[in-house]
Length: 238
Length: 233
Image (tube, rainbow over all chains, first blue to last red; front, top):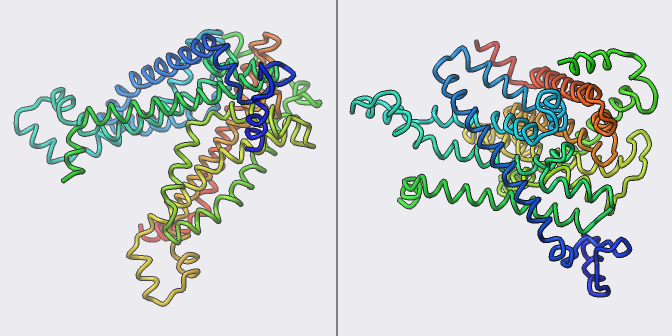
């Protein structure tokens, strides 16, 4: 915190606070001068995050349904994804490297695998928490398995699934930075360049944008969840 | 697939293990960092979390701390610490940027430890706590003989999470030319030797799995309720 205070107190003494001599952490001129660079990195960060979480969700959904349908598969699916989760991100990208090479695909697959673990668990837990009464009523009303899943079970499981999606998204935003080892790290690329060049304004800006992106995406997901599950609010008021 | 085979023969070549830049030295650094930072995080986090849990206060803070931690990229924290106030000087056996790495690791070990210890104590059945008070136990006795044993599995899960997270984070230190096995990965990237990158990745991943396995074993040993459950069964 003392560093921030120092940087702010000297900010007005120079016309360019991000020159190599001044090299301050908080430098608004950097933000305006490099606006396009910062925007590009943030946009790349955003689409890497969305692609990874979307791929993770697309894989997690059938896996969770399989695990629910076949009890003997459950332990291997949950156990297997947990093992994946323990592998550090830098190692994960590197292990994928011989197969997918230095591409954005490597980063997206790696991060999707992490998102997968969280999502499979939450989808399973969410579906499990659906009250049997609701399920039986639907079957009594003549709902088939598919209609039961999409019209009754998934909507009721949505709060738990969305909670998992939030955790997965926020962690993915943070992990994308490690993709900078493959030059596909969004804001992480700016961080890595910042270390090499001892460029404090850039490191600070990229870090702040990264955390802001995580918070914004989390808020978006909360809003989406509230819109998708209006009944939970009604229950809360009652 | 040839690269995987090359990576494995790289790992099994004894010559790659020796010297200051060998696998052995980096592995020791990474283990040192993991153990030290986990121990410090436990020393700081456990007393606070257990006390808050026992008193039943501050839960909001503990849980939010953990949620916020997820949004902060480890990589950014490491960079800010090593470029900024802490610097990246050599720190004895902890290597270059040793102190910055240690602090970053401690920061990332704290949330799971604090959250799980707090939640673990809070989720002990209140009836059991009431009953032990009714039997005349004092606050400390309730904590030591009732709450702590019952909360042990949850507390241990938090420590296990922290351990694996610390190991993973220690790998990223290599991106700021810091200590640990990640250096083999970054060295491989710098020299365009994919087999070396993959070899580093395999070592780190195996390390993570071994740690995970060890903690599962440790968890079984320290769970005081295990014996009771087995006798009941």
